[in-house]
Length: 195
Image (cartoon, rainbow, N blue to C red; front, side, top):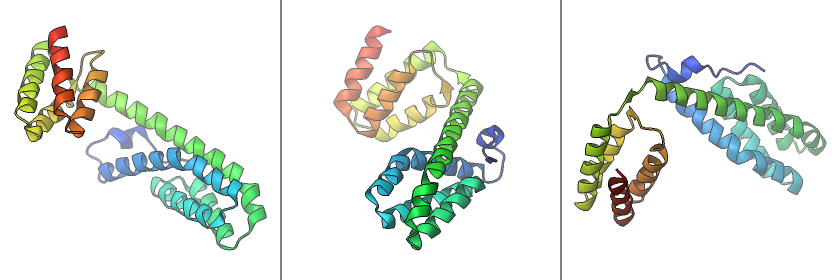
């Protein structure tokens, strides 16, 4: 199967349309991950209307990625759904779901590789810079300045963080997104006391 997911497309910042392509790849991965079981369920329930809607979406998103084999098969299954050719749907869907899941796995691997490559390209943050950034973040959260706190977190994301800090940073982003002042202050206080 020829799939147009090249590592260079995922990391070449100068490529025209790269950002849109990267979002398409990520969106398609989320769709594949979320929809695989749903499509199988629609076949088991014999809900051909919803099944047809799902394979139509799969056809469109995989075509955008250049995964033409998957897109063509999804288009065929969409046509079968529209024409209520249940026998062909039941016969062809397992093969479709296998290559659809395989595509999801390939996208996941490409995204993981691209993320690793991008992390390696980032400049490491010094312990002093990290400590100062977290102190500023704590002060902004105390003042309920979540816009300023967002800016610091965005800036920290540009650096390669120390090993073991990734989980703390993910939790900071989660609490910041939830505008959880108490949770953030508690977490930042724990980090300060550990350092």
